[in-house]
Length: 151
Image 1 (cartoon, helix red, strand yellow):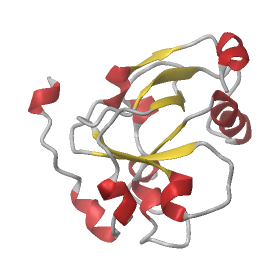
Image 2: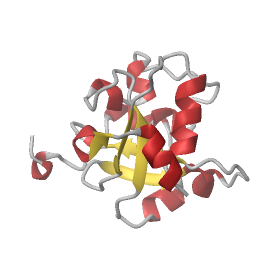
Image 3: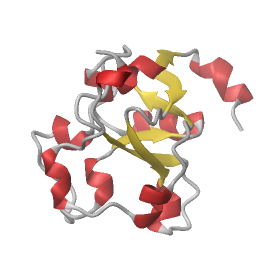
Image 4: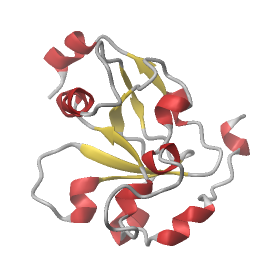
């Protein structure tokens, strides 16, 4: 599917929450980011938002929390590496992909900007359009090589 074929339409389950105002106002520019790949490959399964992975159920207590419906990516490799190491769905050796949150796939916003937390995590929420193919904008990297160059 070509990017021009992706309708900028969100899945129907997005009616369960309201977008953070600043996310809607965020500039439609790509954000360099990392994603832990559950399958150890850059594929649809490794780029499925948690809500869809969990049979369209919210794991947390707040069904109106926008982060429950996004694809999680990270601006810093140390943060995605920590996530993969502490999440039981990811087994060593971890595979991490580098890419960007392309606006043709959805709206992305750094979590700390819209949740107004003091967290230093580089977590980014990326709310994907229906039929978006975010994995097409990523490739597997050598983790150690990027650790030394990541700020």
